[in-house]
Image (cartoon, rainbow, N blue to C red; front, top):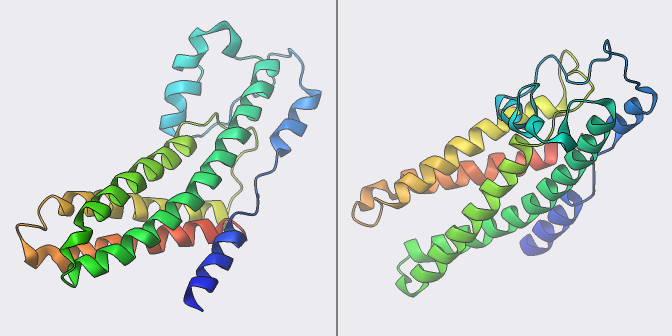
Length: 204
């Protein structure tokens, strides 16, 4: 029953939720210099690439124009669809890693290589997933005030990112320091719990 519940939950999470409302906003844009092509506030990581003086602005294909911003919003849509898909795979990997990790802690040392392999895969998937969101082109619509699911999603992202970093750091020391096992386990479960919660909250 638990496996079926997890499977159903993962299917539910995989339902696409990203819309392209930003594209609609660009339909009426012209070369008017007063048109605001970038939001007033967006993430520093996005500014590195997509800000007014971002690295991508050095290429003619990404000069700051209404037409190019329309292309960027399509890129953003692809990024977030990939972000969502990889998020599902990351969650599945975390579940597998947790099961193997518990058996490893119970004394089944034959699973050590499998656990390390899963950890490598989860880390690659996790940080690729994060990068797709952190470096995606910014949207057009300004962030609305008050509560929103995306704000909760971002708050949870801070938690699971910190927990993932802590889990990886502790993994280097836990073998020679068994007393660190409870902290390593706690960090891993916090990373998984907050990551899964971040996926669920974005649905509402």
